[in-house]
Image (cartoon, rainbow over all chains, first blue to last red; front, side):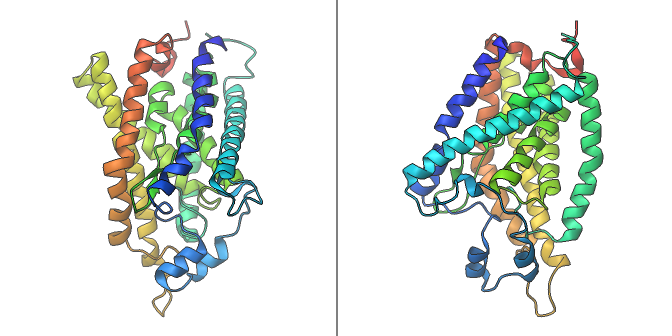
Length: 115
Length: 230
């Protein structure tokens, strides 16, 4: 694990710095990514909500929508930042865990080291 | 660039899932054959890395936002098939836990971001590296690869959005899914990626390769075909 220490530290620093990705767009008055609008935004843009979209848009309820923990709608940016950093760590855990399990499975249980 | 639920009609997202299924199977097989035990933990680190890179939203002042992905850097480190698996993990976690990208669109997003991006970017990198084989040349090639990879993914994403009105328009002229035609979607998505997000991707990729070449972790860059298995 030692040779990966620099990489893990890089991930840690990135997670702590992640609110930059929250502040910059607000600062520059940029909106959502193109094609990632909510139903209200679409309705505002074209005057109606496409019927098929209305049916499938909310098919899945993510537990932490848009990297903001529930109950944070309209919370100040500082609170959202905390949420964002927490999401980053959840993401590291989930992606790291998923990647670890997949690698273990693919390399045959990790018992025999080939390196 | 994460297509949400409701923007693609069932024919598109089912076709994308169908296209991804054999690719995932090949990826698993190739990674099983070529990933050295030494590189295996990188699969996890890479997934987490791209997850984090995608959190750094970059604004086009007054316009839309976008972000880099890190997909080509990962492909250079663990090979394009390994990158496909790592990026798939990141995209699935984003969709399931954070609602970033739809669950019906996981196949489509994986096709664009987890498959096309690392492969086009990686081969652009390999091609350019032949002409510029020095360390600096390779870092430069990696940067160009990053730009190419992200823009290829942006292109196919725009096409997926853009073909929806062709397939799904009600008799009254109203769209059923994503409402904008190719002529609108293509420039809207590509422009930002060509002039800004792709440039950030290029800088991240090029600088990371440049740094890795000089660090004790330089072995990470020499992954392919398991030569570390000695």
